[in-house]
Image (tube, rainbow, N blue to C red; front, side, top):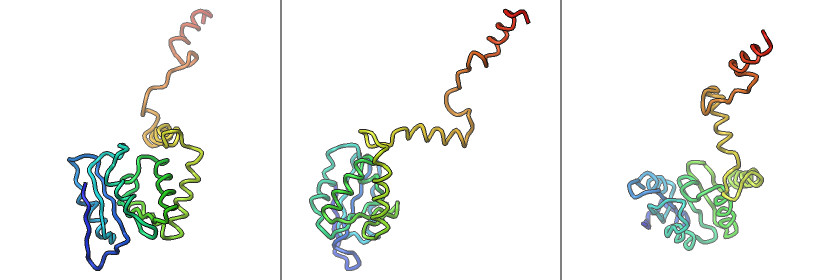
Length: 178
């Protein structure tokens, strides 16, 4: 866990960055560079899986940010574990009057468009998520999309019905005397 603070005049003291990689072997450099270029005056970072409930640097970020601050992340999945977690986190930030900027998804809640986009995400996801926060059937939809692209050969072979099975048809024909 690292905390970087810079006093450069080009950075805004109200832009706080959060960077995370999932394992110790991964590198934070690209995220740190992007957050510094985005004008973050203070950056919290950690090397820890996002599925863990205890993320010390994330907890420090939430304690540190104040009303009017902007939390900047390189991408939303660095910040949250699931869609449900994302919606809860953005709601909590909004209640505290903390803005959110995600560089990869180009979401900025300091703008009307950014706030509208997050509202639409919440509206679209409210009916389609289970307890895990993932959209129900999302893997099925992905497989169906792959099948459209790659053809029906992708995945498990279809079980033939008795009427389609050539051996059973031949047997029925012999029984009928054909």
